[in-house]
Image 1 (cartoon, helix red, strand yellow):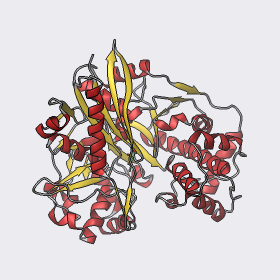
Image 2 (cartoon, helix red, strand yellow):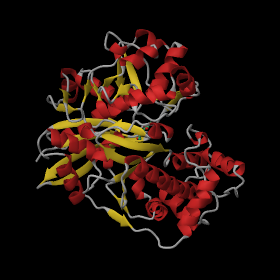
Image 3 (cartoon, protein in one colour):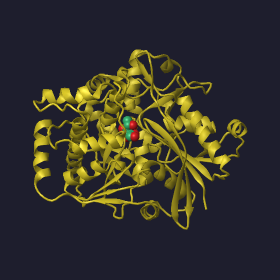
Image 4 (cartoon, protein in one colour):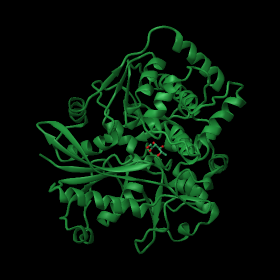
Length: 490
Ligand SMILES: C[C@H](O)[C@H](O)[C@@H](O)C(=O)CO
């Protein structure tokens, strides 16, 4: 029975999940949960990285106090963000949050300078304004202090792993999201880095998920009263871990990792880097076992999280289940948004932005919270269909349903409406996809599972999967046509 720990950090909360194997079945238990609130300082938006490190130590202590003898640990988090390390090994400043306005307009400038086709041909990564490539370019343009003394670039899980072990490594799945890694040469793209004025030596050895990445260093062992627990590089981009946990039977499958972001796509063996993929702004992010995640980012439940924050600020506090209930009671197909409109990216007054979108597209403007949430959820369901069809076209596959994993599956209405929108079944589960994928990679590395397919079978047999069958009739077809027309995606 191998006891291991997964630290899974999302953009709004983190958790320490204890996993153990019991006769081939996976059992999980949440030992520690903590908020991850971005901190605004003046105009800048940061992550509180030392608080996150503190919480990781609390997770380790909770395991110790429960008498759990840990065979290993692994850390995954959201992608693209990073810290820079000085020659004395110290962290240079607080990592920036990728939604910081410092990055506004930088992608367009870099594209103009280097050419979008050049960047895509070397990285295969979708153009998102917050990709690391544009973040670093913004810091270079602004001459931020950290850029002057940096010696090493580490992404968020790399950084936390470094604090624990004292060893500095990058990791494949997360490295690809920077748009600075070349999947064809399987290396950081030195030519691209130089063209951007970035120093190639900052970018270190890239470990594959499942590689040993050190052990708790002496100071941490002494502070926490623990032994030299091994640390693995897992699929450290949380979406990559979530894809590991997709309980698929067939090799050809489509997934939707559903949380703050919605990431919809399929797993492939070789990146698809043709002109069509670039035009459609698809990405080829690294996965477990040298696979690639052909997918698109969809803005996801972030819009509703921000609406909820705004309503709470204005003195109207709702729980998520309450909002789902209100949405269920509202009229269907009244108004739609394109969830990926640039207006919805930055934090702020999201209900007002949804209303502005409806106004500018000459639609009835939703008034009540339930109407706004309904508009967002129905629009998400239709955007999933749109991206699913593009994934089929690009990968030359045809999927007979969609696997949904991640916390978003607790929203039964979204699962149901997604099935209706795509006209195919949705298989929802597991909800703790990223943490389970993180655990699975550690177990594969330890030989507890032969390979990812054995791990996926164990996941299938260990966690409930809810099946949502699509509604019959033309109503959702007609709604989809209306969505395409309004959003201009037709
Ligand atoms: C920037 C986002 O973190 C990223 O694109 C997304 O894939 C993610 O990590 C969702 O948690």
